[in-house]
Image (tube, rainbow, N blue to C red; front, side, top):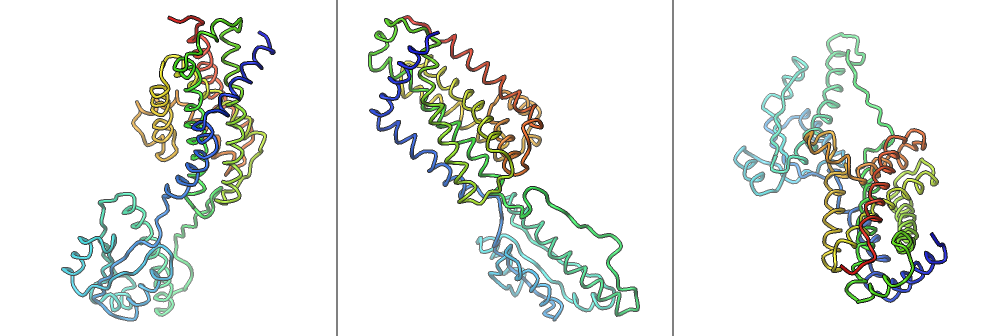
Amino acid sequence: MSARRILAVTRKEIIQIRRDPRSLLIILAMPLVQLFMYGYAVNLDAKHLPLCVYDQDRSQASHDLLTHFQATDYFNLVHVADSYTDLDRQIDRGTCTLALVVPVQFSSRLHTTGQATLQALVDASDSNTANIGTGYMQAITQAYARDIQLDWTERHGGMGGTPSVAFEPRTLFNEDLESMANIVPGVIALVMAVVGSFLTSLTISREWERGTMEQLIATPIAPLEIQIGKLIPYFVIGMIDTAICAVIAVQWFRVPFRGSWAVLFGCSLLFLAAVLSLGYYISVISKTQVGAGQLAMLTTFLPTFLLSGFIFPIDQMPVAVQWVTRILPGRYYVAILRSVFLKGTPAALLAEPLAALALIALVLTTLAARAFHKRLA
């Protein structure tokens, strides 16, 4: 293996990238566009949910309850209904996704027994928003109920202490439970997978389309030297894009970074080795740039978006699908990014995903090296 020949191939590929406006646009614009688009668009936080209220009691107690709902950022009171028919109509129209019904004698039951019942109507056509909104309603109602219980106990000569069972959650690593802190690191993996595989999927197919493959085959350069020389520029580009995305995640999106930059870039090298080798393999087996680009998008974007844990938890998927995710480099890279960003996990505790990522990178690199042969047929 000759370093001089590898450097010559690398120089040739750099010149090719500079001459190709499309590649330059992908290199410079796509990572930023995808990061900002997914960073803002993919948001699992549910706030300012439209809420309708049907207050049949119209008492001071019911007013205090509604004040608890209005004092949060989770709900916006958009309509006060005067009947169940009106409430159903508002839900059907989409005016509100949740409705709260305060029954008659709500206040009197609280003062006499210390207990009362509320009714919630939930539009579950969007099950995710329905589940989150229901959880918010329960939390607000429970907080109000604790205050009422303490007041009722004191008025009836009780001890007036805290309830017998108290639930005090303590959140770690993402204290404000913001989905952006969970989503943005995954977006970095998605961007690197798509950009890396798409760019390298054009390397060999471009040679076929432009008729320069014969010249490349006629040189004394070995297939492995061609692979290394062609991938070096994209390794550098990938690491630069990773650094830019990580800085934007921390400085713009305010995602906490508690880990080591060395661990982040070391893990990114392994991931790039996997996706770049995959793109190179696709470029070898495809004779056209259009076909190679489409195949690269199909084999990287969809698996990384759907099966890496970026959006949907892997442990909630069917067992067969969970086994499929084990061969996807995005699964391990997403887990590593979240651990490094949010937990500050050291490399020693990332041994399992790092080993799996290294094995996948080795397999894909070997496949790519064996796929290319210096012959025309």
